[in-house]
Image: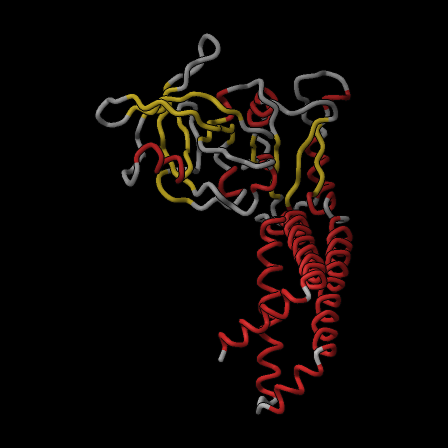
Length: 328
């Protein structure tokens, strides 16, 4: 009986194929727009899921970016408020690397890498798979689980040597893999299509600009933190070398209005598609009074009528979802 309903519903939709196509397109566009907008809005709201979001501050320089030289000066001052800062390069790079396995074989790979410090992984809620990720020394690297599987399969990569050719005299070329993390986390939205596979220490390249964050300790406000930062000078001697900080939640507080507006617009478009779809189904049933009357005379009750209705709804929704998937 179910196959009969599906067959009859498909035949009726084909009979009114122009109206069916319009209904399917409206519904597919509504679903697609709502899905894409929901993904976009969800990315805007991910900041609120950051560890310590309410007390998370971004440190910046008046002019230009912070670099490794600035960070070394900060660490040398031993300021308690500047301990455990989260440091990462704002972009990733691609380079040829060679992994030397336990048998001495050299395995060349082309991989994406990023410069970070040890506080980056807990600061962005990376899942710890194996090894040590708390502190990166100058000759240590952390790799993602996907990269570890690519180079060693199911074997443990901890302790292997990763060779990266030096670009300048004096650079370290051989690094030891000390940790493995889950590559995908909830906050890769910070980096456009982040594909990082290997994490090098920030000391690897002191010229690379750095993004610096700090989760303020309980009882420390942003005003007190800025007062402490005002006493620090970086690589310039004038006023442009001043450091300051702002709470990430303050910078992204307006996102709530954008998220609400995005959901509202997407809901209106989806609702218009659903209304058009329901209008078409009901109108089509209304125009087929004679057919429905004949079915009732042949013994078909309300159960059969609703079965036929649901079959047509099923076909329309299935085609619309498939088309929406293609559009997405």
